[in-house]
Length: 438
Image (cartoon, rainbow, N blue to C red; front, side, top):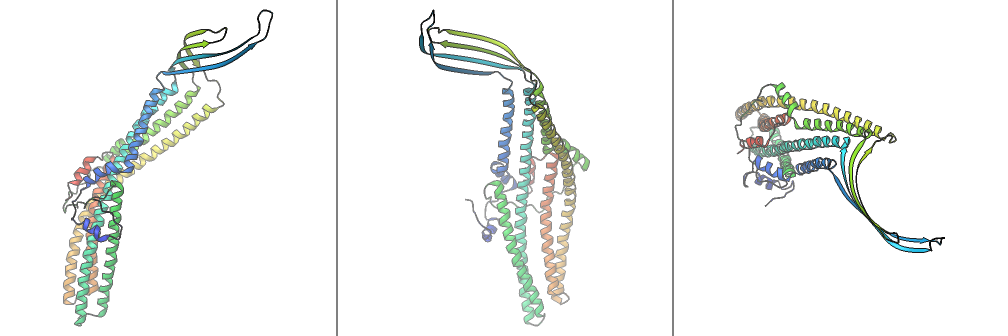
């Protein structure tokens, strides 16, 4: 049963995320998101709609069969003449026609078919973009949730440690070992940790809601990242190779290329308004006429219909110019897309390299701060350090732990972003990262 809560239910959120519920990994959440994410569903519907353009374009090249019928009620009166008497008649006439039209030369429709093929390819690329974007959004939300859980754990641990320092300071003050100012310092730091815990609890609830927005339901306690994960530099270790791969495979760039193709073909399609058209038309018509001179007739006809446009008020020229402007806009969008993809690939590559070093450095920083905190505690016990020194050292230790935890998540996300930029991000990458969770 899903548990719905507001930011006030912090204790409930902590229990849900502390292991009291069945844990779910990144891949489990991805499967939920793939089935429930509105953005991906919208992209899928758009792809299906765009796929219909090919069928519509083919239909314009195939025979068209139509049937028409009409019936008339006729009243006829004739006056006297030297040879015929006056006659008044009322009768009905009927006509039916079956017409088959087969386009023979319609240049604009062949251009539209080429456009449709590019449109369908663009739709497939756009859907691929949406799928990869979902993997990134889901991963960001999942690891933001883990980071928020870490922040709450660290905030609670810091509060408990500060509470012990405050109690110890009060005891020392009572026996005259320290001044009242040290007690006030410890109390102020404790009050600060209480506020930090409230903030961390609210951030945890917000992060969980962000994951809900993608998956469509509250998930059980997320699996945490293992203590040791492989820190791998990009392979190949060549930034230009990754940029080249991105310019060849990035799906957003592929979409922009197809959009430019469609826009260029639109110029040809509008320019075809100056060209003649040729259709084969076959028809069979039947007419039944009543009255004194009534008769039945059947007519079969096959003809070639040639239409040569001469002047359309300048409309074709205007539409062609409009298409040319839009093609130029699509060209500039393609240039921007190529530059953006190049930047993304470079940023992601450098981000992975930097994050590998940062994770290692912060891991060492945690060790160093832990030793510094122990030394400060000893100094406080023998009277060479103050309670302020202890509290500052303790704060730095917990800050180092938070930064270390966050850096590991950022390393994973940068790795995924690099693959996204290169156009190679796939479900298997989510499965591989899921193995790093416990």
